[in-house]
Image (tube, rainbow, N blue to C red; front, side):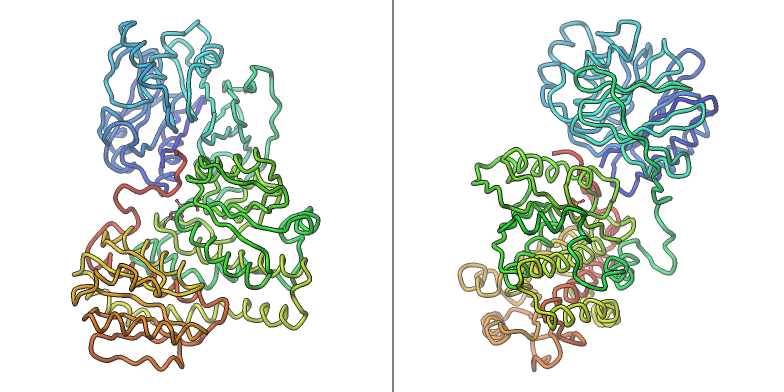
Length: 609
Ligand code: F6R
């Protein structure tokens, strides 16, 4: 989603801005731009193409400057078009005094637009962002820091902004409320960005701005005020952000590479777990786990499906009731809070606006025991929660989540065992059994990934379809949901998932010879029931594509295609089955020729509501 980089320095800052945008590219965007202070005036370059094309455009025009801001935009208000790309200028392109970039959504933009139009401002874009640029220009007092502090009081909604002014060439002012923003400190130069990763290789001295902070960045100093305008001290952290996306190596896409990284990163996530110890989740974990008697999981998308899987685990092994809520719904609905709840957020990025808001909502209802399962140790989610378990998936570049999901599952299984232990529900034998299974996961996953050639053969068939159904039962129902999500995200085939027992209550009406029905068939207690559900599909001519564990006695026949998974993995089986479904989605998308790593309309890190 949108990304910000800004700098005030004594050298041409364009390469730093472009490099920063490249590091933020994986989050998804549809346009990008850079604005610089050049010899007493403001200049900019914008593009609806890739950052690499913007870079060429800038090289061709020779644009250089010591102070500047840059942005990748993911359209919310106004189509992806050059005129809507940031930075935005005010009062006009020809006579620009203010340049501004913005992440987030300004909810009162209509009202402000009407007011500023009345004052004579002419809008050149359809964005909510342009109102902030004009507002700051209108309120400009000769001191940008002071002006921005006053101007943000007029904004309702979420924002992270970076702004500079023609009259103050060595200054960038930035502010945040509801969207992440960090400051990077250099020697005689300072930076701002939406994510520390944007500044990897430039500086590792990072300040995480807090809600309502406004920062004044100059060459040799910076100054922060809090939401009340009081001087604020913020800790400077040394952050070794990843230096960007790794090489593709032998893979065609990041998604494929990330699917094949799963044995290693699941192993990394569980590395060092030699026994079940609450401290793995934080110093206060034992006390917190003792205090709670129920769990509330908050997440979005794929992370939500990880939460749904964990519900089956926690209820069956730790015997604690679990409620799993879609974060964007939970934050706005009337729910019944209980103080002895463990609130668990699950997030790959740790910056998802809806999940962060849901967490804050839960806390405001008195549920203060919070834990996050997150892939980014420096993220807002980790900072906001009392306890954390950091998954070690590494940077996930493909927009469709794969390795982040399986590492979340690994961490959630560990949480399940820990809660069971604290509740006296885990015997030493069970602990030893599950630990052994967890250690074997990388090997088990590798043997599932070795099925790729068989999956490719199916994908050729799938590529010609426009609809698909996914069936699972019990703990594999969330995996069916995730398989359907993966397929629709990257191949644009309409796919829906059902618990197999629900078929006859409606979706069976959709089943014809044209409908592929992907079925997850582990060798578990529900297998015989599932076989009956499969009969219901076959009787209507539906084409079954079954991922069956060994010893299920399901064999290929007319309208029944079977890929056999090497072993049945008990409670951890979802982690194996989902890898097969990821491969199916990937190869189907490949056969359809879609942009696998950057599917249309989607962003990697969803930092707006
Ligand atoms: C789907 C996908 C999304 C994310 C969702 C939450 O492949 O990646 O559904 O899972 O946007 O993101 P995080 O986990 O960063 O909170």
